[in-house]
Length: 130
Image 1 (cartoon, rainbow, N blue to C red):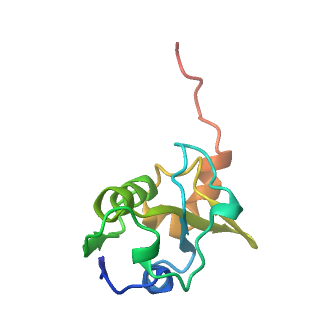
Image 2 (tube, rainbow, N blue to C red):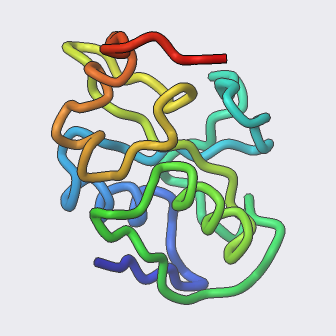
Image 3 (cartoon, helix red, strand yellow):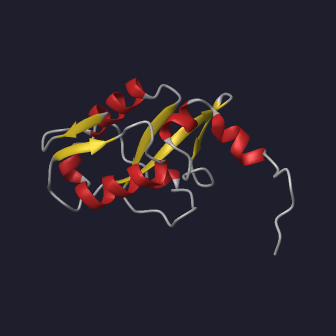
């Protein structure tokens, strides 16, 4: 599955296409990049009606791979590396939408299925040997 990102796109276009594919996930865009494992501050969030040309560092267009087997971290990386956009995948946990700070290693399919809750609270069956 892929999403085409054109020169004329607005943030809402990308968000809507992604959310149609993954109803329990959203893409949120920010003015600044976030550190690995960190949340992006709400004050840096880009409004949905913003043209992407106003917020990106790299002026290219093309296809973004959002296949079910890709991880949240990989999609965020591609948005930054290929298109100069700073984004975070957000997943629904109960009534809340949470940034994937500790679950970015999960695939989009796993996050959309709600497997993030299991990954966050699941204890290993056996203790790890040091």
